[in-house]
Image (cartoon, rainbow over all chains, first blue to last red; front, side, top):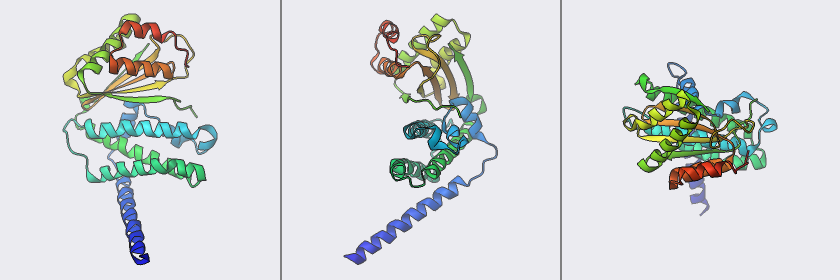
Length: 154
Length: 122
């Protein structure tokens, strides 16, 4: 009984370590230019503001941060899956990164409740969102005229 | 540090009916404001072949009351690949709900106009 539990625990730990390694490798990828700036100009995501201030908990509420992260993620996930003009499937690394983001966001309230490296988690989530924005920009920039921007002030 | 939007809602519109309702809404805004840029948004939405879906990002802005039309302060649109992304700053969470119901259920446009003035959710 204890042996099987031990094997299960070690296997789970190895699996999580493997997943984290894949995600870190994906996040280390360098893009030819900062595509995410084009996407930020077009879509006006909020995650860069989360990185600006290190005194995160002082100036922003936890629920505001979580809402901003979740909404930016929903937007970028949809764009990742559907915006590509060439309709290329999403690479496996990016799919794992999507799951990893969900996992981190799911545990964020727990980190907040117990004050366990909350700021690091938010910074990591913002970094993943920036990576997604870069990927979206790269996939869309295959056909530059498609990225049209306009503004209507009422 | 600039404050984040306190309320946000992301709507993905794929079907014809909600996109048509959105077009009616933006067209109504354009007719009231006569804004040229708003007309461009109408043109972009009308060009159904140019995109597969509309992602509508509704936000509450902290702008002072007044200047908004039908509860909407500002619209920003962009085309990313096959997706049209529209960001709309509204005057409060109730307006966001109202717009969602209008798009999904097709609440009559005149009713939307009447009700939006009653909300003071900002």
